[in-house]
Length: 383
Image (cartoon, rainbow, N blue to C red):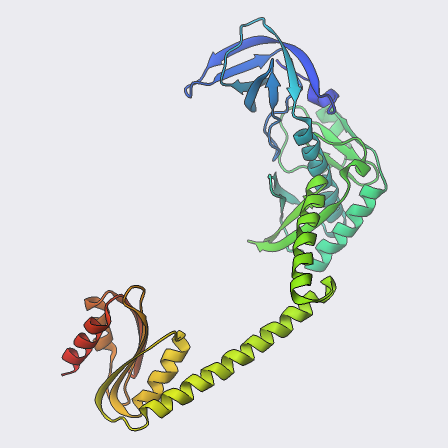
């Protein structure tokens, strides 16, 4: 059984141990077991530690029964003395993240009775899944209280009660525990069964910021940034906000209103531009008449193609308006006031690699063919 030093000193950066087993696996890697280790194995939603053994990089760490297995690309001799060096920057960031997640979930549980159904400490963010729906206001309130607890610099301790002792302790747990129970206690806040690594004082976490809230089945999924990651996330967003502020000549907190005004202006301009296009098109076709008219226009939206074809259908028996290019394909609308065009559209799509459909009097879609192929097909089919 491997002695797990990461439970007795989570701030330990270096340690010494002895190789008790070294076996080559099916991937050509070596699975090394030491008599004692400070490397945390992946588990409980927390990534494994990284670092080196005698200068050789550890690629992965996992638990196998009562042992901790270190995966390396090079072998070690049984009985060999090794020095392990932890990547402590990674370890401490995970400690910040995991401790912050405990506080937030403990607060949410005490306030709203939600249970943590699972979480993942990823490289980009932490994701927590709750079993009930939480409103954005409830999540923000839990976030506020969480940060107040962090700044209050409360103690975080761990203990290993027996199952009999644990029966008299109220604690959170994501799953039924069969083996040894380890409880992580945050002073006057939360007690939770957990195998992960944590800071000693909540103040070391720094801060916690919720970045997204979404519904997931019958529950709520929350993502957050904690500790150093929260600072880096804030810095990146602050820099982006400063760029936008300069581009728009607006104060940072005025950008949302400014962007909304720009969106409204763009929508109005698009409306006016479409009106000009339709008026111009109406003038262009005012003297047309006959059985079929096929018109190709440049740079139209599907809505503009439809509206122009509707105008053209007042002039001829069958109207066709298309926009696009031989290389990229064409958006199309076919319309008629007197004919059912659905079979024509079906044949058109089959013959020219098109997709679309609609009502008897109007069909829309896209077609991948050249302009002359489109014209030849439509005229031939309608004759």
